[in-house]
Length: 118
Image (cartoon, rainbow, N blue to C red; front, top):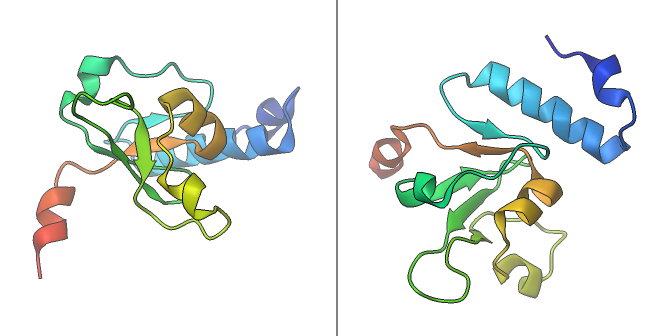
């Protein structure tokens, strides 16, 4: 159950929406991890096996790997029409991503298998 009065207390409208979506997504997908805009970022080693997360708008973000300067940051793989090409391709640190587009939810464990089915 979503406690709207508690969410609305001392919050901006955008933050209230993000927190509401966080609670809804946690209720809807209890088997998946969801990080809200006020949650701590996961430890780096946690992401050794999670490449993708879905943001609050349903867009897909991939974790950058390798040894480059943006290792561990996220890059949009979805489609956000309101963003310019430069903004769509720019890597984003976790905290900025959660604050701007949260909540973030990992994908179901069988997503890779579902994605490859024809």
